[in-house]
Length: 129
Image 1 (cartoon, helix red, strand yellow):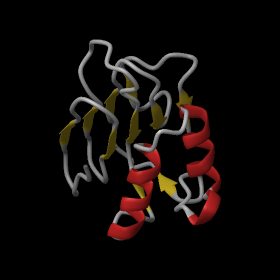
Image 2 (image 1 turned 30 degrees about the vertical axis):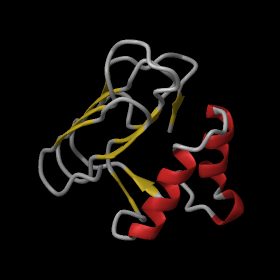
Image 3 (image 1 turned 90 degrees about the horizontal axis):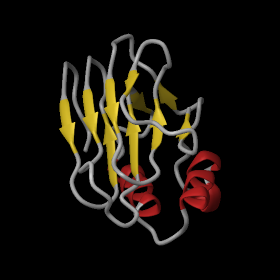
């Protein structure tokens, strides 16, 4: 899900979610609070250079929902392996707003600014950029 300008509330469902808040004070909730097999969420507090490119978003979504393990999916998307759109400090940008990010029960990947954004349930084993 891709939020627009302004303050958005994006709620994921069962399974893996890709939530990009965009500009504004957003609340991103990855999924239910109970255990669901591999309910990994990718939560981006700001925006990416890919937000206006539906094919890039489709490729990111396809990789994130693939059967590869969490660590491999994160690595592939960070480096842009195999021609994937990369998600890293050169392509993902924070907004000036305070965002609230809540992942699901499984391993999540957060793009947020510590000290400004609120990460409700981030665990030490989850990636933060």
